[in-house]
Length: 357
Length: 90
Image (cartoon, rainbow over all chains, first blue to last red; front, side, top):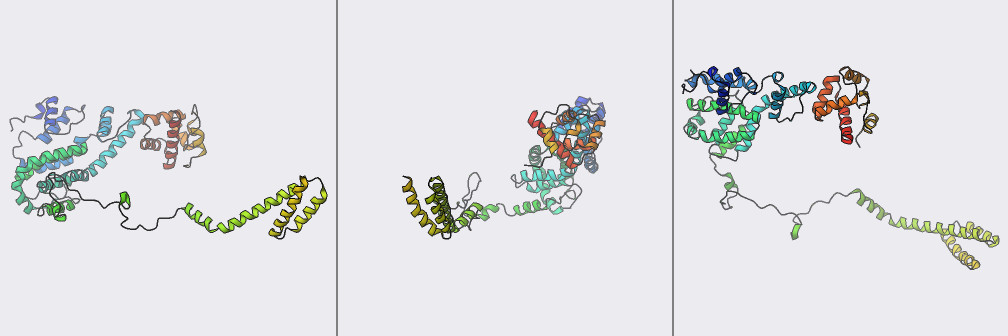
């Protein structure tokens, strides 16, 4: 193995680039100097003399976590305009033109995103893989858990020697399977997470194969998932327990019938809903209905007043003042009772009309 | 209807032409002076900056804050004013 690994400083920049890509390491910006590539090469691919991995593994682990930000993105102010734009694009920000007046803003934005990524990445990787993993290989759940745990928070270390001893033999055989599946999963997540977790995973095989204990990490956030996976271990298919009557389908997809919609498509109403809230308009209508009798009286009064006015008009039109004066007097006298007025109006209306004709 | 100031309505009602930067909603005398010192003497120059930032609210607000020290309300007023002007005339 040491034959292949020459001193990176002797390699050309192109060769270093291709080596890094082959080892799935994030490439630094294209205009970076060769030293950056050399550094990355040394960091991830290892030095010529590093035959004994176990002695280096802890250093490597820490180096990776320490240098993470440096390998990802150098200081934003050191980037060229294009590189800054590319960096922002990687983080999902579509930046506009980077001109003199906008550059400061975009640098600030990049810094903010890097910081938030550095802190949130740890949880993000977990959750990103958590949801996508839960559907896959249950048998790999145990070791995937540990992998996720390590990719999650490296600060916490919990000795799980029991699990380790049981699983370590199976570990190696399944390692390739899970790494490949994890690789796919990681691709779905963000690129930043991908870089970070991949570089960590490079260390995992070394860790797991060499040691049987101590370097299994359990993050704070995934004890729930851990428990879930553990419970899945003894009980292989909880669904079958929940629904023992369902027939096993060939595809493994189970469906349960939903409660039918009330009153729909001829189905009887199975339970009564409480009274629907009353809208203001219906309230108004009800109010109006209550007062319908008084309203009728109001309409009647209105009609009477109209008749009165009509009579007055008729009287005014009348040339002869004698009967009109009498009419007016009678109208004023009869203003006390509406009914009396109405009668008088009727009786006097007829002679007035007949007089006109 | 959201509460827009008279200044906002005046600005959005017509093409800005050569209006001074103080005609922008949210930009008063003090802020206007600061912007002028930085070279943004006309409203259209601020419009230019707004467009270069691709009308992005967050970036524009940050830029306003950095350039003239506008507070959140002033930033919002200015952004809203320019955005509406762009919707109407651009």
